[in-house]
Length: 227
Image 1: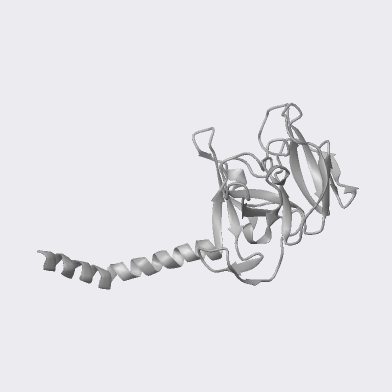
Image 2: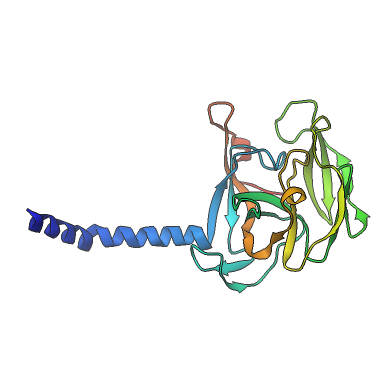
């Protein structure tokens, strides 16, 4: 009986088993080192990214890592101000999605939700709701982050850290913030993010489902680039 099972296992391994294992290794290696998508469960990046979005993460945007590790084989670029990145939180090692606000050597400060970079305040223009969120207590502005414009959301009635600094970003580290400025756990709370914690750049929304409405597709958000 045992011999029969051994023969069957051997036959399966020679036939399908080996191919399945190789396919799994290739697929997971691709996700680990080249490209992946990230499910967004919270609203910390609203109105740019909303709950239920699946975002594309380009893991080759800045470097090449050994699959399943954070060890870098090579680097050819660095995150720039305004780009959205996925990284491991210094606080609890969870994967987070935030916007790069401060680069190594930058001096960052905030006064009443107005960002200052190297002593200069950013420009803000009021805009209409961009997130399909109809709660009137929220205010929306277009923030010009050194030439890269993107919407941010302010919640005047929500208690948050609206002023801080100035702080200087250390070498090989970055200052991250969510676009939902009054409801985002970011570098204001957990500090600077080291370069080797960055997984890749989030560049687009692949698909989106309304988690509050029976997961109906938000067709207008499918395959849209992130600002």
